[in-house]
Image (spheres, helix red, strand yellow):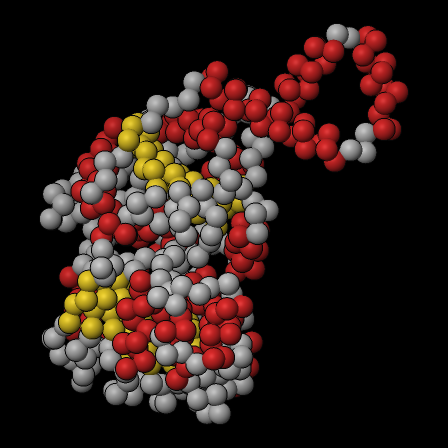
Length: 500
C-alpha cells in the first residue's frame, strides 16, 4: 500500500517522498489508521520494520503546531534510539515545522532545559533524564495527548517499569498510549493491562521476525580460539559492513583494540563512552567509513543502520530474544545477510533455545584453514593493487622501479608486494580476557538461566549503567521515589490483528 492511501496530509507525503519512500511497510499499513482513529495500539515489530514512522506520522499529523505545549511524549530505552527517533521525526515533520527535541542522560542538561523552554510539541527521552526534568519542573506534561513506549521489552529488561509509572503520573489520565515491542512476553502484556485501554494489537508473523533472507551459521569454538577464527572469517567472507556483538563493555574494548592491531577498520560502542564519541562512531559506520562496529546489545539497540552485510555474535546472547534483535540488523530491504554465532561447548543449550524461538536450525560452519584465509587476504590485496593503479600518480616512482626490475626478478617483486599488502592473522598476538561462563540453562518454559525478564545474571548487573540510556541520570542516586502508579484507565480487553 502507498503512503498516499493512508489519509496523511500533503506536507507529510512530501517529506516521505523526499526520503525516497512510497510503499508503506506492513506495520505502518496496519497501525497508522488505528493511531489516527485515537485507539490505544500495541505494535509487535523489530527495529528496521518502519515502526518509528508508524507512530511518528500520525503524531506529526495531529500535533497542533500553533500550540506551544508538549502534546506527545516518546519514551525510549537508550540515548541512541532517542536521538534517532528525534532525527526521523524532524525529517518527516519538516514541512509542518513541528518542534521535536530529545533529552537523555550523559548530555548537558542546561542545553536541554533551553530546548524545553523553546516550547517543543514533541519530546523524545530516556526514562532517567525525563524524570530528572520532571523533578526540576523543566518538563511539563499536563497537555500530553499521546504517549509512546518504544522498545518496551528492552525497557522492561532494563528495569524501567517503575520509572515509566512515575513519568505517567504527570500525564493526563485521558491520553492515547502506543506500545511497540519486538517480542510479546507476559510481562509486556501486564504493562499493557496497567497502562492501556482496550488496545488493538498488530502482530507481525513470527517468521518475519527472524528475517528469511538471513543465512544463519554457528561455529563451534573454544574461548581462546574465537578471535583468530573470527578474523579468518573476515578474510574469507569479506563483509561490506559488519556488526560484532560482545557481552560486556570490557569485551567490546578488547575486541576493538585487537581488530585495530591487526589492521581491521574497526571501532566499538558501549555505555561508558561519551555521547559525542558514540555518535561520532555511529556516523562513521552509517556512512561506510568504518567496516566493523563492535557493540554491546544495548548500545546497538534501536539503531536503524542500512547496508549491514554480516552480524557476528562473538558471545552468544543469554536470551534468545536478543539474538533476534542482533541478526535483525542485516537482511533488510530485500537484501540478503549473514549471521555467524560462536558457540562454546558449554553453550549448546543456549543455541538450542535460539533455534527453538526462531524455528531455524543454524548451519554449522567450519573455521577457515590457514590456506583459505591466505587466499582471501591475497584477493583483497589484489583488489587494493587494482585500486591504487587506477588512482595513478605513480610517475615519481618510475626511476626506482626500473632499478628494482634490473636488480630483481619481477615475480619476486610481485610476491613481496602481495606479502606486504596481505596480513597473517596470527602474526600479531591478541589477548582477549575470558568471560565468565553463562549460567546453566534450564528449560525453555522455565527460568532462562538468569532470565531476560527475571533478576538477571552477573554480567547484566555489571552493565546496568550501559542499559539505562545514560550513565549519569541523577534520579538513580535516590532523588526520586518509585511508588507504584495506579493507572485509572486499566482494562483487560485486546483485539489482535495478525499481519497477513
